Image (cartoon, rainbow over all chains, first blue to last red; front, side, top):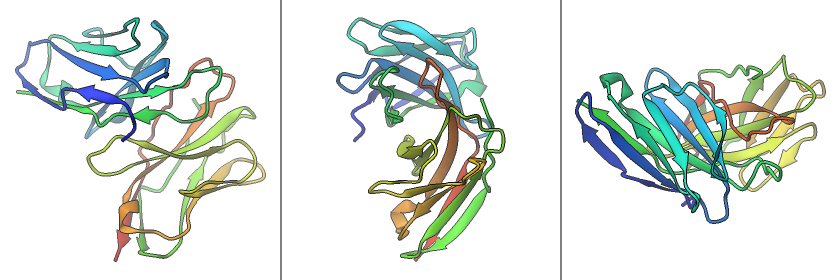
Length: 115
Length: 112
């Protein structure tokens, strides 16, 4: 158990819909990362938040957005869903950046299926 | 981000050592070398990381070439549980973000 909690574990929805994935980082971790893993693209970095502020952005679509709340949990919002958005979405957390130990702790992922 | 090259797949026998290679010829002086692995149906997990010197921990050893253009992850005695995708990743040491960019990794198969 990494200490990172993601909900829901599984989600099935239809094209055009909007979903929200939630991540609770390990206690004390200030940084949250979102990754997408699909069969043809591998693990893709989407976005990172540090203590409530966006720190780095990857290949995140404009239809996707994220935020980190004052209690440090994070949400990834996916809208106007397409079939190609079906994937595993992982959240990871780390202690901080200044004291970066080299380790990201990943959750078990949220599996999104778009029909 | 500097690129790494790993074999697509490797096989090993249970209880034998495994050496997983990684080439990173464009590594810069401040890049850290990280290894993560992903077991089936799980999120990636940290294995080990290093900068210049060889590193050991309870999971594995990391051997870094003197010119830092390659490294090898060593599993001393492979078990069936070690069957996973192993990712070699470079992280810019001077970066203000801890993000990691994953490549395709090496799929390790362990035979009983």
